[in-house]
Length: 401
Image (cartoon, rainbow, N blue to C red; front, side, top):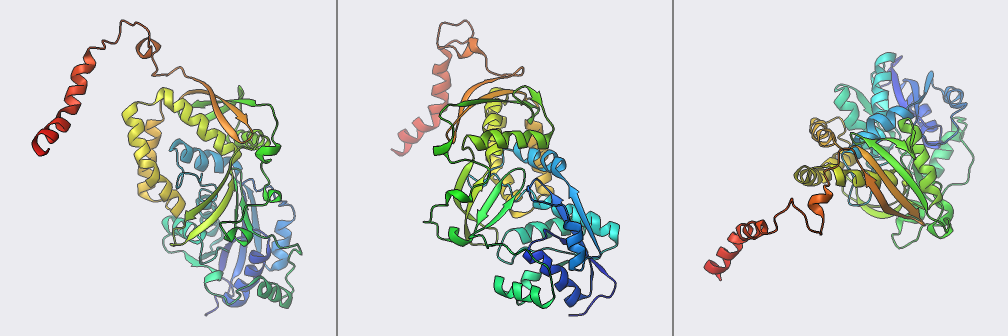
């Protein structure tokens, strides 16, 4: 491949084995000046010294940026306003982080005059698609280099040998029997011992939550207040988006909330087993649905619910910056205008139990809904209502038998 003297590439960098090697590989194979970028999305990893480490590996510059508030405010919250969930269980924690990372990479590429970006996603996974669809949507002519689709380094041993050959300082740690990805919304576990769907996850794997068996024997109550579909307070205290989600992670985690174990369908065509911890997100989903039950019009809610699978698939597959996702978001946000109120939840050993909900914009009218005598609803009106709805069924039976 032709080397590009004095041209720059922006690399999504973590400082781990793969991306440390990719820095050198981009220099050796392409002749690029490498600019590293690491986004702090709440992965709770030590980022101090990462800039120095990137430069020691050969990078000319490194950006280490705290994007936690932007991540929750502009990505997680809009997705939750849409009620997005993929294949009934997955709250899209990894999926929603990728467009923000890729967007920032494109911005850095423009600032640095770089003509290419690079990432460490493999050729089998979803992340390569998410990174690259975002990049092309925001910068149509950007060059993308995906080393895992090009190099011949096919194993951890070969990566380590490459690192030794090029004197690349890589962390000497015991290999985990799985791979993981963490941010403020969740942590995911895939591969390794989890590749057999019959294997139960080991308890020591989990980081955000205690097991339901070890959760307190006493239930904990939590209140979440929403305004126009966005959570704004926890237990009466106003919090920033990132701090709010962090707080709910702590509350949910200590009560064993938010663990799921699924076999999902990847965009590239294969099935993949994933284990996820999403304690704060699970609380938010339950609380949000509770306030919606009081405040959303029936037909608007049913229409919204019919669109959730399509919206979730767009996020999962990497189409965050596609016009169809943005159009759907406009509808989802319009449907959320009246979703203001408070939900009270009871957390107990992994369970989230509805304990109460209230709203200044409630559509629930006790005088109409009561089973006692009322002056609002004439029960005799139901006769015509039922007969009209039954007309086609009666005609079908009469005419066709």
